[in-house]
Amino acid sequence: MRVKYKVEELDFLFIYEHKVRELENLCLIKYELDRRGYRTKIIHIEDAEALKAMRPIYHTKVVVTMACYQNSSIEWHTKNFVKFDKLIDMQWENIVFPMDEKDTKAYKNYSGVAKDVVRVSWGEMNKKRMLEVAKMDPKKVKLVGHVGMDFLREELRGYYRSKEDVLKDYGIPADKKIFLFVSPYFSDHHTEPYLAEMCKRFGEGWRYYYQDCMLPSKKIILDWMGRICEKREDIVFVYRPHPGEESAQAEEMAQRYSNFKVIGDLSVKQWILISDKVYTGNSSTFVEAFFGKKMCYLLFPVAVPSDYELAFLKEADKISEFSDFEKTTHEDDRPFPVSEKLIDEVYTIDWEKPSYVKFADMAADVLQDPYYNLTKEQLKAYYHKMGPAEKLTKALTKITPLYNAYLTMLESDKPKWKWLEAKRSKRRELEQIANDFEKTSDEEIAAIIAKIAGELEKKRERDI
Image (cartoon, rainbow, N blue to C red):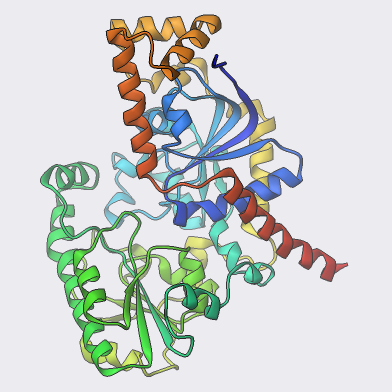
């Protein structure tokens, strides 16, 4: 069977990394842009077909990425499979460590071509950093709020499943109180190369933050929750891992206590809405709890170094002792730990206009205005330097008949040429990489958007 090279023409291509962090938010944006008549698509950063491509299979006017800190960020996202003119950085990691807020050379203050892309800011605090420290073009900094918070607005509350429905899936009795802990921690056992890379990005202090703050904090908090699990049969602790976190300690706790669960499925917002209490640490999760009108407690059994403690938690009400933690499992009248004024500075509280509508307005402007185009030089600058063999292969793929023949040979098991067998082996390796990542199908994306549309159309009918 002959394989033919195909290209999909788009206005916006959205590329996500962590499904539970990003996918629903992108589906909400896609819903609005599709409603306005734009051509859009959502793919995972390790999409199997895209990884195998040696020529662009997507021609998009705007590519929307999850993060863009330096040239290598762009290459990681787009590789060989996207041809684009403009780039919008969703900047899902909008909040930076305090030490980076004034350091122009910090990893998260951008370098190379990444300085010149369009970037989303949730609030005025981050916008100020991007203008004053990162020295970004003011026209390319877009204040739109956090799209994820839109799911906590009244018009989208019906999007989420009921408490009874969710608990049934995980074998948790419906009459139990759910105490959600959203982990701000990294995996239990990181290797030295990983630690070295993190220190390269965030300073040598990161090693101390991880080894002397994160790990002992996690151990203490798990001990606290275990002690409550032993005393209280009316509650269930749900430990929600940080994206990419692997915690043998938490898994061992789940084996020991029937009322302690480690669950990484479903979005944090889904769990917040069905929980009775929310707990976290050096994390912005409390903001989602705020928008969801749920109480959130901040657990800090070990003091976080000032360079790594989130700026808007400096003056927050924190819990550092087990006795105070135990009190929270009974009380209902404690004030919210962070002021609404400070939350507004970081996330923009706007009960009138949803952030996904603001994003769609901004994206439409970026699409139409040539001011946001990256130059030919910028679009070449982020690629790695190729060796002679790679250059030759790349040149041959530009000739479509030759590329089609090459694709056909790759899909078959003949001829058995040595270089072709190496390419087949590489494709199998890339397919395995893609299969190892959390991603979803076009059908699941369509189902999410249909659910979103159903809820928002109900609101339109009520407003008529």
